Image (cartoon, rainbow over the protein chains, first blue to last red):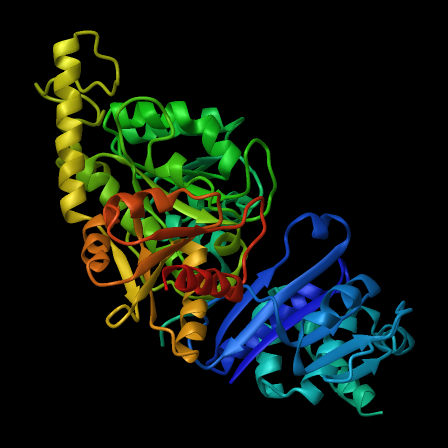
Amino acid sequence: MKETLIIAGFGGQGVLSMGKILAYAGVVQGFEVSWMPAYGPEMRGGTANVTVILSDSPISSPIAHEFDSAIILNQQSMDKFEPAIRPGGLLLYDTNGITRHPTRTDIRIFAMDATEQSARRGMARMFNTMVLGGYLAVRPVVDSSSVVEGLRLSLPERAHKLIPDNEKALAAGAELIKK
Amino acid sequence: MEEIKLVKGNEAVALGAINSGCDGYFGYPITPQSEILETLMELRPWESTGMVVVQAESEVASINMVYGGAACGRRVMTSSSSPGISLMAEGISYLAGAELPCLIVNVQRGGPGLGTIQPSQADYFQATKGCGHGDYNMIVLAPNSVQEMYDFVFDGFDLAFRYRVPVMMLSDGIIGQMMEKVSLSRSRPRWSAQEIRSMSDDWATTGRHGSRARNIASSLELDPNEMERRNLDLQSRYRSIESAEVRFEEFLTEDAEYIVVAFGSSARIASETVRMARAEGMKVGLLRPITLWPFPSARIAELADRVKGFLVAELNAGQMVEDVRLAVDGRVPVRHFGRMGGIVYSPDEILNALKQEGRSNG
């Protein structure tokens, strides 16, 4: 098993922490993991992205130019990363602010309106876990129990009281994607 | 069960400092290595191990604080990124001249000048050929994983004290910023004043006691005969390092017809290239120098007798390739492939370069 995932969106959407939760969940399940953020000028321009690799063998290159899956949370990232998904790969995107929807026919495409749904349910701050729930519903690379453990390991102690709400957000995301 | 943590390379350096018995860290923030200082400030080791952490007013001040701490026989270190290391160059030469042990971490970014904050390996010359003036060398360790960012703090201090030379850990923005699993089980306490006195009383300023002669940490010597003697002494120490401390790693070189030579983050990317090449039936292997100085010249010379060629992949305009060419000595072609300015190549870009090399050699 090897999953090379890019998560890309705006700074503040929880892109990096979503990657961190997934990476920790991978550690819990005994995978080799790497988490490589873009820390350069693109970050300072307000966008954020991170490459997460989960693998059952040692990870050679932490840098990828082609991805098995992409979670896309804004238009710039759609323009940049839709072409970088492997044929047969997966693209999951949040529809908020997307004006040019994906057009590829050789990949699996899932859309969710997590921005609106998380706000409507009073879970705006858990937007990222909701998206992660959607991704894991269609690409179950780790078990839900590992994700909860991943949350515990990646969140600071003071935020542990939010774990039950995050679990609800994960489930809500999985529900959304099924529709 | 062994504790496995998921941390950034930069955080691993900070944890390595605390757990390796480091006495003092002196540094100034610069991307992409600021997490080293930030993590140390957050963990407050002065309350646990007694390690001192100082955010100095500049890189020049940092390296001179290192000089002072090293002169006391303490394990001291600094870190910076490329432009900051240039500022430290004078101090590094003085440390080498005064025969002081220390660890300097360079998390490289692209240059020249202020350049970019993106990863690069363009400081190979600066690290291995001496970045300050005079005839000196630093031992240069090139980590290719977060685990090695942790372990090389320990190894760096050990080597620095074994030979009384500055040691550099030459990393880059990729390894510094990425998170991977790391085992933090390796750990040792700081030395006591008594231990330092028993090990380093013949050179360190350990507090004059009894009738021992005064120890002076200085690189100044106005008598040319004496200065030449000091140089010869340093050179003989460098020869010992060259014969005892070369470290490298090989991957699928046994039957290889072509060898990719790459260090640090590039070695990670190139190992994927090697896998891809093997899947296409090309007999390609990887040699990864772990010490960039001393350089694994002897091993490369051996391999040159039985391969068709070398490709040196590095994120610069062609620096380590010169050392590979010296080792190969014209017996087979040695080509370079690189990207610059913060652009990082993909495994298939290196593969394409390799295929071109294969074609031009027939």
